[in-house]
Length: 451
Ligand SMILES: Cc1ncc(COP(=O)(O)O)c(C=O)c1O
Image 1 (cartoon, rainbow, N blue to C red):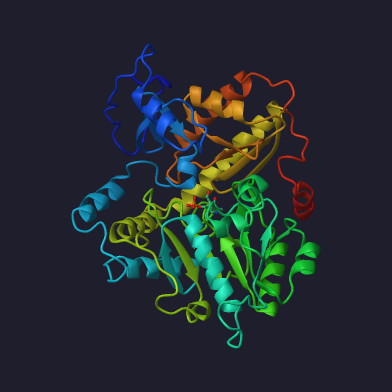
Image 2 (tube, rainbow, N blue to C red):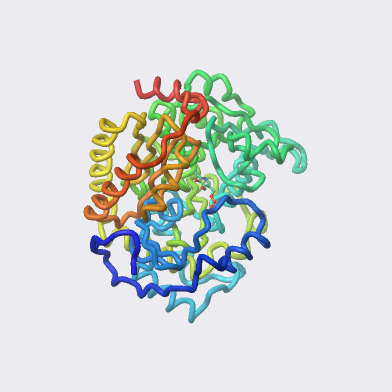
């Protein structure tokens, strides 16, 4: 029996047979005990074991049903168990899961072709994750910055990176070096040298820091982890112009905001110019690990065999699934759905903001939505989960919604039914208030950019 909701909500797939695993309140769940004892304590997780998903819903081992408005943090763009994805996985798993990048496989080339059509860029390298794509892009930028007379092994004059305040680019050494949030970076110092942070959307700061020693500026077209803050068009245009003038690369991290999330194939497509490199991952292979570096012919012409590589990246199974993902987005006209559902969500959230004073600001682009609260968001996430709704909180005060592209109007209505109760019933906190400083240090710059 589903505990959360008696209302029947249609999904595109048949309801799963929720297998109830034995969980007794008297006896602690052995899987949770194992996790507690044997995993590195890198995550603070609720004591719930998730077991399956269908469409926009996830189920835990007791059969409890959750409306998934987080989508595996922007990964499950097609929801769970999309029949076409399941079919491709079954078919290709029986053929070849892995073949090695020493050989061509049937899907890398066609997938690369489709990604160049979507992005307007020319060449693709497949990696395993977002952070690995970031590190690869940083290597490309260093490579491009080195002049022929500068010997390998020495620091080229043009070796510095500019990154943005409030940025998040992943967990490997390259990625943490360009990640502004100190708790992700400082414990691991020294990180990759030569990185300077620019105030978010601040043109004067950008111009002051962008000199001939910069090999690349890297930015999220819309900051995700930082709380859903879009780069302004003025900032993008200036970064593009300075990168071109100074012979540096403009690198767009579209790992969270790309591949349809904003209602466009890429978030940068709202701007008049393209980056030199765009990085993607999360939804690309519908939940299988796959990232990619998309770049221009000019950048690609500088790399040669042996300079970069990977064992797993671009394997046949992941690439076949990714190709199917891209086709489904087109076939099911999901960009249209994203734009329509985004409008529904923005309208409903604006209504809630007029009812609940604790909602300070709503920032939304497509199905990438931040709801900034005047109080800490964590208790709202907990309350939502108890009531069968998955959302998360980033930067302490911003509730983040990343629903799947397939979300229906009825599911948006279901969301509002649950979310309004969550806002009303979450116990009020005495002292954790949002001063406007801790959530997003660049808020002033952001507000100024919005005019
Ligand atoms: C904007 C952005 N860049 C990079 C990453 C890192 O991606 P991954 O976790 O796949 O390494 C993330 C992950 O959340 C992200 O949101």
